[in-house]
Length: 195
Image (cartoon, rainbow, N blue to C red; front, side, top):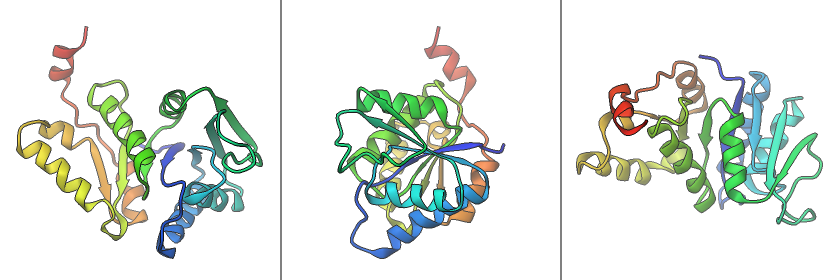
């Protein structure tokens, strides 16, 4: 299934190593080359800006969604052609989830994990059926993936919910898995928990 848009979750910092910025640049370029609209948090800093700028440099479409309480002079990228200002971080996440066809996490920290776990939990609950992916380049997310395996092995996460998550180590693998995504959620389980 081809995705026409992706919501990107990643750091508002660049990290200590140039490889992270290079990864975000390559991701933004690929979105433009594949004619995929890039939704992101509307920031003018960090890996967020790097990916957005790389996409725009190749005439790709970028849509920013940012809370209005952030500073226009330091945080929000006011040069975006399409920028939506919302009242809260929660509203931003809801709009990203509603608008994008898929969700991808590059390196980041608290905010990235907040966005990632919200869309993954919503997939678990059948609130959407879109792919949720982690790009585990440089083993950045390997400890997180191991913790998810602990959830499953200890009986707190069902196999079909564990399998909702796409994990890729390269951009080529990521985009291939997005196209071939099949939602693993169990319809019988969903029928039991929902009205």
